[in-house]
Length: 308
Image (cartoon, rainbow, N blue to C red; front, side):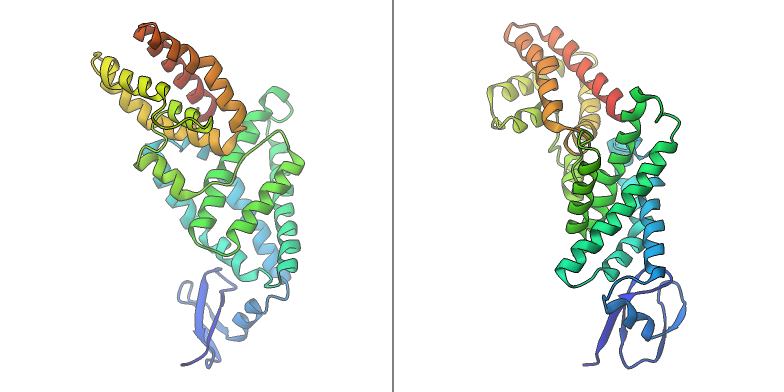
């Protein structure tokens, strides 16, 4: 069997497999003609060339910064299209990152810290140029918009490609971010979990996520009461079906933001104290209208906080 050389095209970044016996080849993606040595250079893993580093710095920064409105694309009707677009536009740079990564574990660790450190430098400079940055009370908005891209698009897209560099990159980026911004928490996401939240209603209601976070079983007294309220009294109301559909559309996006783009423990504690405890008490006291008022206020407030 002929020997195969694997590496990234130095022009478009796509991963290629080329017979080693060839002296020259054309990239099947961009059509660029080049010598086989161009791929050998990419598989040696003796460190990135200056061209590689420049490419990665520019393109990784673009993958983090060119999607300022993606925090508005987390509702069910937009998420899947937005993620597909993001993945398509950034696959080449993620594959180039994979091709350039050193094979030696220690060298890879140091290299990743440099790559991720440069990316965070570029994000920091971009945030500081935002007009809202100097208004302290609006900095949270700036942080949140960037955290959404890192947590729900960039790191999940890299993992979805099954790249060996994906998990160590996500862990390194996350650790370095928290060193700089310990109060601005986020968690690298997973596409299958995010998609499952919409398709299988894993995050069907904020109540479910809150109770599960607290270690309560799926059939606990609270969830049983809330589901009976939903399927009984609420569904029988004139606007009941519409409200239920709206909650199913919004809840996965809200829970994704809580889980991946915020301090989830603090958020769930707030949800419990501010909304769910009064909701549950209202149900126990046979006040379904008050429960609906509280629940609607919760969805409205969380939608405004995360999705507006």
